[in-house]
Image (cartoon, rainbow, N blue to C red; front, top):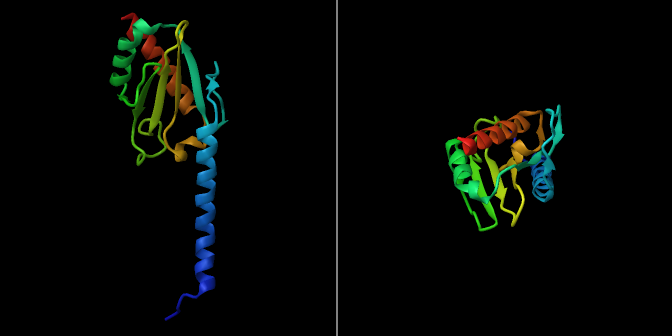
Length: 150
Protein backbone atom coordinates (compact mmCIF):
# COMPACT_ATOMS: atom_id res chain seq x y z
CA UNK A 1 0.00 0.00 0.00
CA UNK A 2 1.49 3.36 -1.01
CA UNK A 3 1.97 5.88 1.75
CA UNK A 4 1.65 9.64 1.55
CA UNK A 5 4.84 11.60 1.83
CA UNK A 6 5.34 15.31 2.34
CA UNK A 7 5.77 15.97 -1.40
CA UNK A 8 2.46 14.24 -2.13
CA UNK A 9 0.64 16.51 0.35
CA UNK A 10 2.37 19.57 -1.09
CA UNK A 11 1.03 18.68 -4.55
CA UNK A 12 -2.48 18.59 -3.11
CA UNK A 13 -2.26 21.67 -0.88
CA UNK A 14 -0.82 23.97 -3.56
CA UNK A 15 -3.83 23.96 -5.93
CA UNK A 16 -6.27 24.22 -3.01
CA UNK A 17 -4.39 27.22 -1.61
CA UNK A 18 -4.39 28.82 -5.07
CA UNK A 19 -8.17 28.43 -5.41
CA UNK A 20 -8.72 29.91 -1.93
CA UNK A 21 -6.38 32.80 -2.76
CA UNK A 22 -8.23 33.57 -6.00
CA UNK A 23 -11.60 33.47 -4.21
CA UNK A 24 -10.35 35.86 -1.52
CA UNK A 25 -9.01 38.26 -4.17
CA UNK A 26 -12.35 38.11 -6.05
CA UNK A 27 -14.30 38.74 -2.83
CA UNK A 28 -12.16 41.76 -1.89
CA UNK A 29 -12.33 43.16 -5.42
CA UNK A 30 -16.10 42.69 -5.60
CA UNK A 31 -16.73 44.14 -2.15
CA UNK A 32 -14.72 47.29 -2.85
CA UNK A 33 -15.96 47.83 -6.42
CA UNK A 34 -18.47 50.63 -6.94
CA UNK A 35 -21.67 49.76 -8.84
CA UNK A 36 -21.92 50.87 -12.45
CA UNK A 37 -24.96 52.56 -13.95
CA UNK A 38 -27.24 49.95 -15.47
CA UNK A 39 -26.54 50.03 -19.23
CA UNK A 40 -29.46 50.64 -21.56
CA UNK A 41 -28.60 47.55 -23.61
CA UNK A 42 -27.78 44.05 -22.40
CA UNK A 43 -24.03 43.56 -21.96
CA UNK A 44 -22.49 40.48 -23.53
CA UNK A 45 -19.99 40.26 -20.66
CA UNK A 46 -19.42 42.26 -17.46
CA UNK A 47 -16.65 41.42 -14.99
CA UNK A 48 -17.67 41.71 -11.31
CA UNK A 49 -21.19 43.02 -12.00
CA UNK A 50 -22.87 45.47 -9.64
CA UNK A 51 -25.54 47.70 -11.06
CA UNK A 52 -27.23 50.88 -9.91
CA UNK A 53 -30.19 52.72 -11.40
CA UNK A 54 -32.39 55.68 -10.53
CA UNK A 55 -36.04 55.21 -9.70
CA UNK A 56 -38.12 58.27 -10.60
CA UNK A 57 -39.81 57.97 -7.22
CA UNK A 58 -39.62 59.73 -3.85
CA UNK A 59 -39.53 58.76 -0.20
CA UNK A 60 -43.33 58.63 -0.02
CA UNK A 61 -43.21 55.61 -2.37
CA UNK A 62 -41.07 53.52 0.02
CA UNK A 63 -43.93 51.39 1.45
CA UNK A 64 -44.97 50.38 -2.07
CA UNK A 65 -41.34 49.62 -2.97
CA UNK A 66 -41.04 47.44 0.13
CA UNK A 67 -44.20 45.59 -0.89
CA UNK A 68 -42.93 44.98 -4.45
CA UNK A 69 -39.56 43.77 -3.15
CA UNK A 70 -41.21 41.33 -0.73
CA UNK A 71 -43.52 40.10 -3.51
CA UNK A 72 -40.37 39.58 -5.65
CA UNK A 73 -38.93 37.17 -3.08
CA UNK A 74 -36.73 39.60 -1.15
CA UNK A 75 -36.73 40.10 2.60
CA UNK A 76 -35.75 43.30 4.34
CA UNK A 77 -32.42 43.27 6.16
CA UNK A 78 -30.36 45.84 8.04
CA UNK A 79 -32.25 48.89 6.81
CA UNK A 80 -31.55 52.36 8.16
CA UNK A 81 -33.09 55.81 7.84
CA UNK A 82 -30.93 56.51 4.76
CA UNK A 83 -31.16 53.13 3.04
CA UNK A 84 -33.54 50.19 2.65
CA UNK A 85 -31.67 46.90 2.28
CA UNK A 86 -33.05 43.64 0.95
CA UNK A 87 -31.67 40.17 0.29
CA UNK A 88 -32.91 37.12 -1.53
CA UNK A 89 -31.73 33.57 -2.14
CA UNK A 90 -29.15 31.50 -0.36
CA UNK A 91 -25.37 31.45 -0.31
CA UNK A 92 -25.72 27.70 -0.81
CA UNK A 93 -27.75 28.18 -4.01
CA UNK A 94 -26.16 27.94 -7.42
CA UNK A 95 -25.28 30.64 -9.93
CA UNK A 96 -28.71 30.65 -11.58
CA UNK A 97 -30.20 34.14 -11.27
CA UNK A 98 -33.47 32.56 -10.15
CA UNK A 99 -32.01 31.25 -6.87
CA UNK A 100 -28.70 33.07 -6.45
CA UNK A 101 -28.17 35.20 -3.36
CA UNK A 102 -28.80 38.82 -4.33
CA UNK A 103 -28.49 42.00 -2.32
CA UNK A 104 -30.48 45.12 -3.16
CA UNK A 105 -30.41 48.55 -1.58
CA UNK A 106 -32.54 51.65 -2.07
CA UNK A 107 -30.72 54.83 -1.08
CA UNK A 108 -33.02 57.49 0.31
CA UNK A 109 -31.63 60.94 -0.52
CA UNK A 110 -32.82 64.13 1.18
CA UNK A 111 -34.19 65.23 -2.19
CA UNK A 112 -34.30 63.88 -5.72
CA UNK A 113 -34.98 60.41 -7.10
CA UNK A 114 -34.28 57.20 -5.23
CA UNK A 115 -31.30 55.11 -6.29
CA UNK A 116 -31.30 51.32 -6.26
CA UNK A 117 -28.30 49.03 -6.44
CA UNK A 118 -28.30 45.27 -7.01
CA UNK A 119 -25.40 42.86 -6.60
CA UNK A 120 -24.64 39.22 -5.99
CA UNK A 121 -24.33 38.15 -2.37
CA UNK A 122 -21.66 35.49 -2.94
CA UNK A 123 -18.36 35.35 -4.80
CA UNK A 124 -19.34 32.46 -7.06
CA UNK A 125 -22.00 34.43 -8.90
CA UNK A 126 -20.03 37.65 -8.73
CA UNK A 127 -17.23 36.89 -11.16
CA UNK A 128 -19.06 37.87 -14.33
CA UNK A 129 -22.44 38.59 -15.88
CA UNK A 130 -23.53 37.58 -19.35
CA UNK A 131 -26.75 39.55 -19.09
CA UNK A 132 -28.71 37.62 -16.45
CA UNK A 133 -28.20 40.16 -13.64
CA UNK A 134 -28.76 43.02 -16.08
CA UNK A 135 -32.08 41.47 -17.19
CA UNK A 136 -33.10 40.87 -13.58
CA UNK A 137 -32.39 44.54 -12.74
CA UNK A 138 -34.44 45.76 -15.70
CA UNK A 139 -37.38 43.52 -14.72
CA UNK A 140 -37.13 44.61 -11.07
CA UNK A 141 -37.10 48.27 -12.11
CA UNK A 142 -40.25 47.71 -14.23
CA UNK A 143 -41.99 45.80 -11.40
CA UNK A 144 -41.25 48.57 -8.90
CA UNK A 145 -42.54 51.31 -11.20
CA UNK A 146 -45.67 49.31 -12.05
CA UNK A 147 -46.25 48.51 -8.36
CA UNK A 148 -45.98 52.12 -7.32
CA UNK A 149 -48.34 53.28 -10.07
CA UNK A 150 -50.94 50.63 -9.18
